[in-house]
Length: 378
Image 1 (cartoon, rainbow, N blue to C red):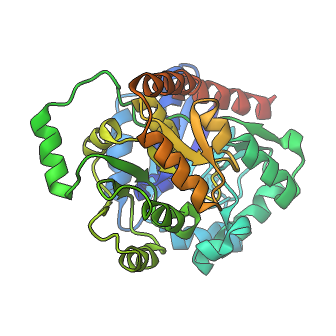
Image 2: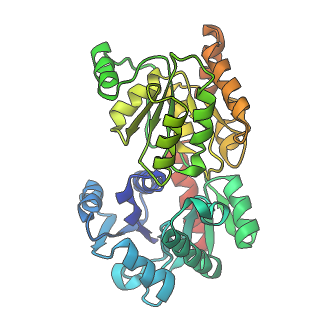
Image 3: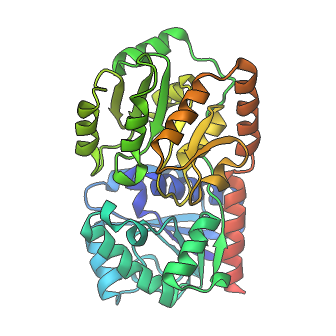
C-alpha cells in the first residue's frame, strides 16, 4: 500500500502533535512492506516539519510533500470549499490518514483520528473560529470517512452520540506516552537544585501538566490548595491558554501567590525531573479524550489524582486516586491522602501505576493502526 498521512499539526507541540509524531515514527519502524507519503503544510513553521521529516530522509519507503499552506488556508480549502483533492499535492495513494484539523477530499480510502469532541461538549472553552473549523471537518468526516480511529472508548461513545456515526465505523486505538521517563534513573542532585531554583520550586509539591484552559478545572484545584498545609506548592506546567488570566486572578484572590508556580512550557528534560520529584500529578479535568499527562506520570512512577469522568478511568485503571472533578472537597481530601501516605502504601501505588502503564505502547498503537489501513483496502 501507499499511505498518505497529514503531519501538519506537529508544529504546535500539543497532545495531538505528539500523537502524530509518535504514531508516524512507530509506523515507519514496524512496517517494512508499505510506502508512506508525509504531507505537511505551514507558512511560518515549515522548519519544524522539515526537521521531523529529515529523520526519514534515508528511508526509501518514505517521501515527503511540504507546502506553504497554513492552517487557516487549509481550513478554507478543505473544510469549507472542499474541492481540491489532497491527491494534487501528494499523488495517488491507497489510504489517506487525515489530521485532527482538516478533512480534504481524496480518491484514496479515508481514515482520520478523533481525539475528543471538545468543540461540541465544551464550546465555551474554545475560540469561535476553532469550533467552526472542527464542525465543518466533522461534517466531512461523517460523510466521507471509511473508518475513524477514536483514542478511547469514551471518545468512541461521544462520536456515536454526538456525530451519529455508526459504531462499526469506529475503531478504538489507545495512544501511548510520548516520553519514556525511567523511574529508576537517578538525576544528579545539582541538576535538581538548578531546575528548582530556576522555577522557584520547593518540596513538597503537586504537579499539573496541562494547557491553562477552563476545561482543565484548575480553579477548583486552587480552591483545594487553600486548606492544604502552607508548605505545599502546586506547580502548573503548560502553555498559557485562554484560562490563564482567570487562574492568575484566582491565585491572588485566594492568597496563594507564594504557593503556586506557573512555569509555562518547559523542556522535556526539566519536566521529567518534576515528574520524578512531585508528590502526585493532579489532573482533574472536566473532560479528556485520552489524557497523555496521566500516562506519562504512571510511566515515570508518579502517583496520579484524576477525574472519574470521560476517558481518564480507562487510562488510570486501578492505579489512580479518583475524584469527582466538580467537588472541591473531594479533590482536597485525595490530595491530603496522598500527602499522608506511608512509604509502603506509596510504593504499592507506584507499582500498580507501572503495571498499568505497560498496557500502552506506540508499537501496539502502530500495529493496530496498520490493521485499520489494511481493513479499508480489503
